[in-house]
Amino acid sequence: MNISYYVLDPTSNITILVETPVPVELQPSVASRLMLAEPEAEQTGFLSNEPGCDIALRMAGGEFCGNAAMSAAVVAATRKGEESSTVTVRVSGTPHPVTVKIKKQSDGSWFGTVNMPRLIGYRYLELPGVASLPVVRFPGITHVIVEFPMEKGKAESLIREWCAFLGAEALGIMILNRAESRLQPLVYVPSAGTLFWENSCASGTTAVGAFLAAESGKTIKKTLQQPGGNLTIAASETGDLLLSGTVRIRRHAVY
Image (cartoon, rainbow, N blue to C red; front, side, top):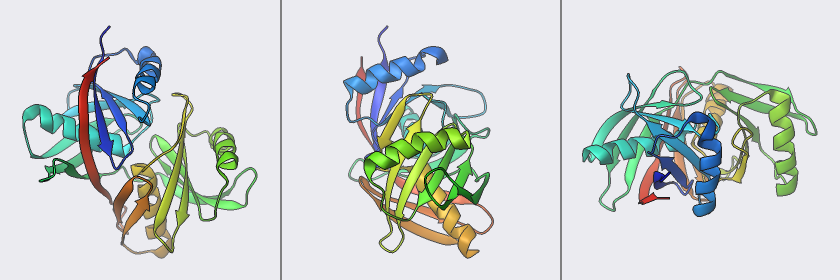
């Protein structure tokens, strides 16, 4: 079977979006093959058409992903020949569609803002091997915020242990340097068998913003520098979460 797909670059979190229909049970294996063919890719999602939204997206592990949602909105607009649009995207891992506003820029990239899902909650928890840390839960993914350096091998070992301990569908360790507004994301999706030091993480950026807003008790807007570029989160005291970044379409290919 030939697989038609897009390769997109949302803040260097290289994302494959498959437009050929693939049964859910085959998606993890198809994703693995495509990521071998596209070694820069950090994740794979599968597009479809469903009632009640402009485009539907299921990530290979069934998790939620904000960068992929923004990328799916760009694909939807490109298919329609639009250069500015508000796109409703149904995404795996969350029960309600998200709204993405996108606009094409003069350099060919797209600027997007995602109305991210509200957090389920956050609290400090004692996790195996460390002291108490803030754990931020969203539909489809959970993030642990770490404000001290972590050796890579240790973090990769702990993320698997913590994911099982928390019973999370997917888990991120967000290593935050608050003073310098820097974020290093590590994301583990057990059902897809993927573990990546990501170049950027939209849901992780959102988790940091939600945590900082809850901690301070006021609205915050923060741009976090990540290995692949910057993402901006606006988190209000009422719980609204707006994530902004850029997306580029690298190519449309067939495997």
